[in-house]
Amino acid sequence: MNLKGTLKAYYVLAKPGIIYGNLITALAGFFLASDGHIQFGVLLAMAVGTSLVMGSGCVFNNYMDRRIDALMARTKQRALVTKTISKGAALTYGTVLGFLGAAILAYWTNPLAASVAVAGWILYVLVYGIAKRRTVHGTLIGSISGAVPPVIGYVAVSNRLDLAAFLLFLMLVFWQMPHFYGIAMYRLHDYAEAKIPVLPVVKGMRAAKVQSLVYIILFGLAAASPTIYGYTGYIYLAVMAVLSLAWLRVALTDFNGKFDAVWGRKVFRFSLVLITALSVMISIGGILPKQFVTIHMPILLHVLIALASVAYTTYLFFFPTQKGLQLAQALVGLTLISGTYLVIIMPAHMVQSCLTGLAYIGFVAVGLVLAKHRLVEQNTN
Image (cartoon, rainbow, N blue to C red; front, side, top):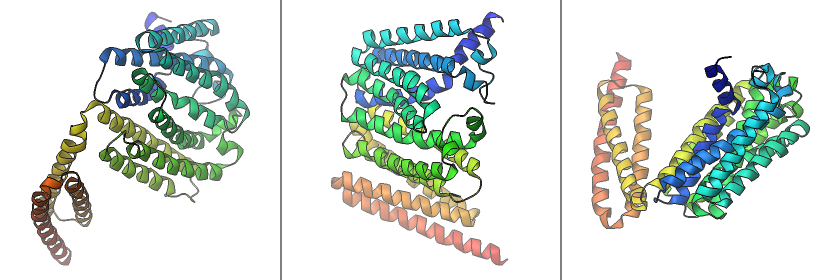
């Protein structure tokens, strides 16, 4: 194998997809703790150190799972299965990554962040690595280890484990359960062949669906907690409430259907959208100044939604459709909600906001009536 192929094999052995996915949540924790005061040196050290520790855990996980991986279609081409990389080289590689990552975290962030990272490594490699072969509760243990990255990011700035760190941890645990169950459902054959006791294999698809539904509800409640305790704003709360309800709707759709693998894949795919949105919304609240997040951003969003409603209503007048009318009505509802929020947070401008809102509603209402009238005419003709 040439140098390029060798480097690629070592790169893939560290499971870069898992590293990048978890790094997004670690950045969210970092920005939440930063509260608008970003220390770029600490940010870089946290990102590099956390990535290296996670990469180390993935390498050791590959080493421990090499016999299982040989039995599963999606993993049988991994480097340790095909012997592209030797067992000794993999262990050395994983050890170097882990020690280097922990040292970077300890020296350039703080020892607590390094300790949390090492604890996550132990949970993932040793506790989860053994548990997933022996108990159906291995998924929960894996979720606990997978919820560590945002805590590392938070602690790298705050140097303490407090309520905010716990809330981040709790959200990630609840999110990962239906995420993992979804994978297990549409990869059921692989897990059964490898004799891994995941819930869909041991207790059936119905049990996995029910538990996924429970954890989705718990995630929605946990996702609201940062706003309840004052760590995030109401825009974050609104976005996460909508997305949590959307995830619940995905889970309820065809809940009693026969195509369990399709159901699991849909729940899994939406979980990726949700965790990305969660991380972005938390990060925005930590990067931007509080005044911008609480006042200027709501105003900007309200204006954008209102303009979108006006533009879309005008478009419907010329090209009316039934679905278009429904979408326009939804935009009107969003505008009313955002306008009401502005009135609440800016009582000094209540009269101006109400008059502007009434003028807007009048324009859009007339546009919707005319668009509906034209649609009726088209259908009649």
